[in-house]
Amino acid sequence: MQGTANFSNSVLPSEDLPHLTKLSFEHLSPLYAKSNRYISLFSTLFIISVLFIALLQRFIPLSTTANSVVSFFIGATALVGIISIFYTIVADKRKFYALREQDLSYKSGVVFRKTVSQPMLRIQHVELKRGPIDRKIGLATLQVFSAGGAMHTFEIPGLPLEKAESIRQFILDHKDVNHHG
Image 1 (cartoon, helix red, strand yellow):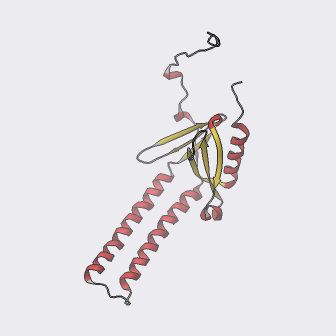
Image 2 (cartoon, one colour):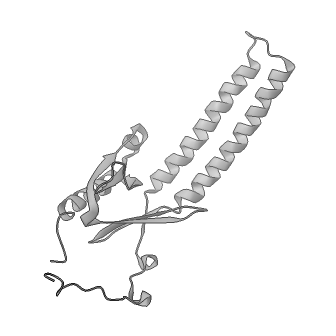
Image 3 (cartoon, one colour):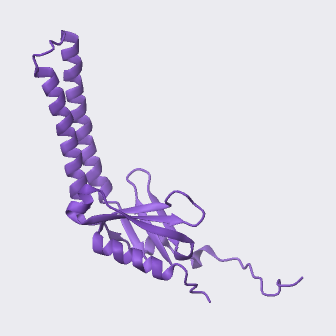
């Protein structure tokens, strides 16, 4: 058979494999966590304000039952808002990324932890995504698209714009380079 003389498929002992846990991950920008807390806080306060206005307005009289329902939703919104803010604080501290010569990794999760790694050679393209809040505070989200996939493989939020642009350019410069040859 032609071409099989160079084929090799040796067993690799698991202790010889590289460990992602030894990978040096970097934190996201502290502005990212701060903006997420403010978004949760202001969203909660906005919903509570609308409900209070509905409760206190005198244009359309509310029945006792409607008053009770609106009051319940005010309390429920406050509780969900507080939980959301605390969850955001914990979750944002557990988001990291790592860029190496051959791959890009992202780690996140509070209850269910996840680490995603994408080899440079499998990256189809990368995009910078910036919403109005990101633009205001100088942050960007880096979306990584895998070859053969229509949706992004993963995204790294909360990167300072300059760093996101540098990572994007690094990937574009290195994704087609075969470092094995």
